[in-house]
Image (cartoon, rainbow, N blue to C red; front, side, top):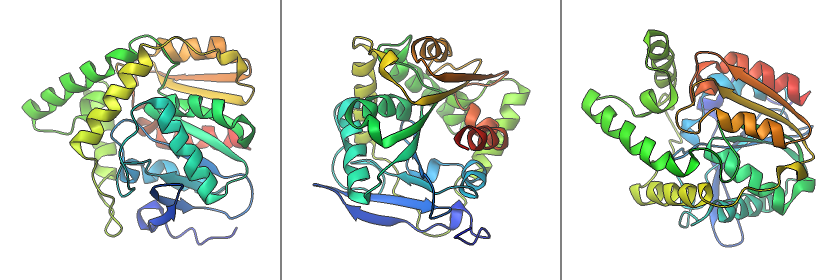
Length: 281
């Protein structure tokens, strides 16, 4: 192995690289050899929203790369107006970092962007992971903003983080998983990322609504071996979308976790990291 694994994601320093027009903030950890995995996050997320409990086990076997797209976190510029333009941001970052070939994970909105990236440079992606996401024009995707704002209001009333309602079931078990996840965040002591701006958040929601109202893509063109993951009760991007992805993508595996919502990846970080390591082997 090429790195000291006593260092975990919470200690990884932020780096910066110049793209065609904007400067991207990114973090990388893990081995220097082999195929790296690039991870695209959910709506409103900066690099600090990645759970170290999930990333650390993956980084023991390969290089993990996360970054802030344009207008997010510590990266410069403005949030792109469409999911397709966000995918162009990914392409710009990949070119700037000179990544020749990689595995790609897209979580929620990141999964939308990952699908569009495959239209730009499919030859660069070896394997694809789509978590808590769905296809362009999928069921309920145009209503993500409505669900998000409703749960944000609920969180204000209950004086808690909106992710408690957006990501997890609302029974006792779901509350426990939410507590575990929320306590795992905000523990970084140095190189803390810049929180997302309200204007950037609204721009993302508009792009998602637009993408959700567009005509479906021909997903049969995705030739990469694909792992599709979700909880059985995803309210943000309804779980039906994961089944639809599975029907349309030729070479895929589908994993649905019981008693889990949109944040199933954060509910079961150990299980998910093991599943992904086995898939990427």
